[in-house]
Image 1 (cartoon, rainbow, N blue to C red):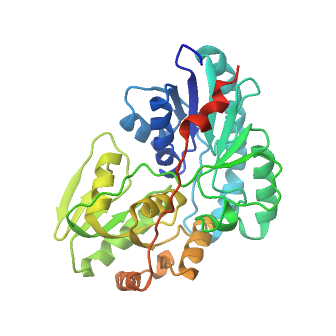
Image 2 (image 1 turned 30 degrees about the horizontal axis):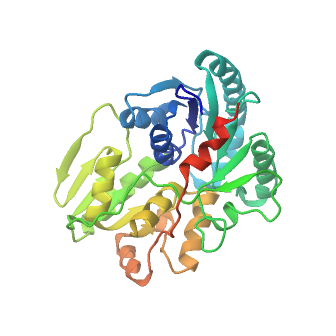
Length: 354
């Protein structure tokens, strides 16, 4: 064992809040096991981790400039249009990693879906729940490209179970993988607590614009007809937390992990996107929910359809959602996690090699 604290670069993708928040338990485990995490990201992902770990070192990465189209049908084409900017950001990432490995004496790298964050000089890990990347009729090529990138890393950590039952289905499982996959179990920053019920409904939004704002405006109208107490977390990361009470609804711009854990545990049901990080949180807390997948995001649409078909969680398309849809929740059994004991010490042995 090395006498100094080995420095591990942790770099989540800035796409909504999910990649950053699912890295929180990893960062906490690194600190507990005697490592010194250095966090690298951009935008809201960087800001939320700065709020969670103010004592750590933070580095800024170039933005992938991921934008959603206003119409879901154009989502893929918007990504293709933005791909030159994304490729430039990945190229810049590669240069920065080379520099930082030397400058900070980095012993290992954990990249959550940042495609240029790896090094041949130190053990590098890629975290993803998408070994297959669904993009409609181009899924075969996007999946092959993603797997080609993953092969550059020493290991791929998938936050799910290897066997059935699992949460990702075909997203996180390959028949014949050509690289080392380590299924590390679902990751959540939350713990289930028995707290008195304070809210009938928790609404939590996240994800890139403009879709976050479009859904917020739609839901602000719909909840006027809801009978019960609502807490509405808008998912807007700002320097200061703000809250306001409008009739039966308490609005927050954002919440820290501690506040959000408390609010989840105090709420009867949850209305949210079907992003995989949210799915893992709901499973850990054993919560019943209703999903509104982000229009045009094939992964969220696939997960929403999978859980509805399995009788776990109902969903509706964004433009068709009405508040009365929430009555469907009672007909579904809800998400529940499966027992998964993760040995962090054993997982991090990869970073101990000389």
